[in-house]
Length: 225
Image (cartoon, rainbow, N blue to C red; front, side, top):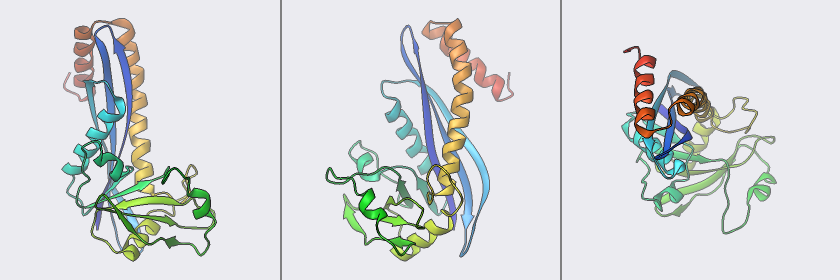
């Protein structure tokens, strides 16, 4: 089964005419078999555009990239049911993994952490037509929520999550490693772009000059300058 892991990051710059959002989406492609996964490529997509809401711009780009991928499985660090309320629909072959979750005003993480017998996956239930469940891969791992659109059984879901979740990710043990890597890719290029954009913004404050400088920067970075 081939997969694409999609995760984004953003940075904004204020010009005299308004806010410019720099959004980067990390993209990790690979495949998973019965016992292991391998990564075949790492890439990123970036946009610079006027915006009011950086989070909304990032979500829009993440979903655009996700829909453009041809993999069997799309991995996203998104709560699909929340995004549906913003007019965003998850791809039909997607699996969202959520690190921070709350339900009905109550934090369930402590209750789930008390459950033994790892690895485990809970019984699924539907929210807005999306299958939701929780999983935990090891006794020292955190529990996570997932939302599934991809046609998988709970057993198949747990198997995939286990194969791709046993790498030593210090920030969140038991998390999905391709998604972790996609996040790091996005943040790396966001940080690199941030330093350049801050410099340009400090030198040229007008909107037109700023945009011209950004386009020139893109040409230089792509080797076309």
